[in-house]
Length: 328
Image (tube, rainbow, N blue to C red; front, top):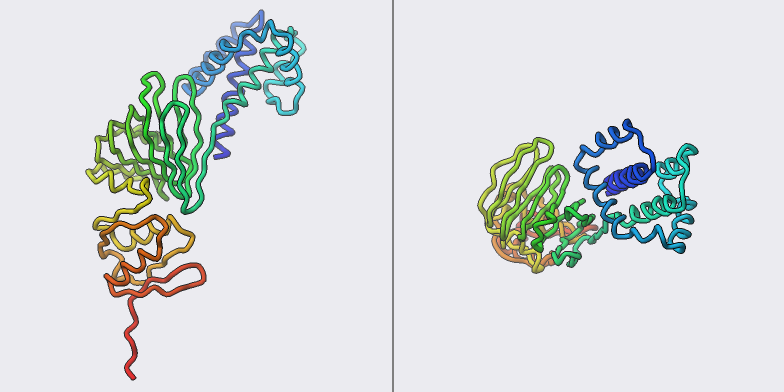
């Protein structure tokens, strides 16, 4: 997350610096050409539009002596971005109080652009009601960074899993980024989960567009479809999306799930881990519903059904074939 936050801040600082530079009374043609070349990148254009919009909302600063004083003080703070400080202090660019106020305000605005972050511990879940009316449910051991701009609502899933109920806003697309996978929603409900080698997207309602940015591949999902985006992408497959999102109700639902996969899923919700030491049973199918984190209930069920035993260890359990009792 730190890398992405640093990149966001760098782009916004550049946008603020360009805005300040272009506000000078005299701007060379070479500078303008350089600016347009910089703005060709969509991420730069969006950051610049955001800075312009915020400045228009706060234009009264130019005639407010108190705000001018505050922004002059901001210019002297150590947290002022180095690039902007260097730009504003160039001797060839004399700055009026209004320009100083502009630069200081933009620095303060950049600070407001830092994304909000939410994080859950192992076994915990969290419901986050977003500013636009959307609802985010974070699953176990998950983390997101949220930035709502003027033209787009962006959520970066840094790890784990999130369930999204998106409020419709045609003027601001809702985008979830998970590694190299980008999910664009249009008033919908969907689940995004980061895997070890990719991202899994499941659609419950509405429509989403899934893009693999590294290869510019795009798929449009319909309700009850799921796609896993990694090195080798299979087409979307039909599945029970309600079952896949059962974790939002505090349960895990297994339907013809291999025992090894069921054990791995239960382990996501508890620090007490289960190790399956029964190779001949890894593919046997499990059916049923269990509370998230209820390791004991799961162990009781599978030991009885499949003739296994759960041996207690220092950090959890080893699930293995039951050892026959020795004859006396």
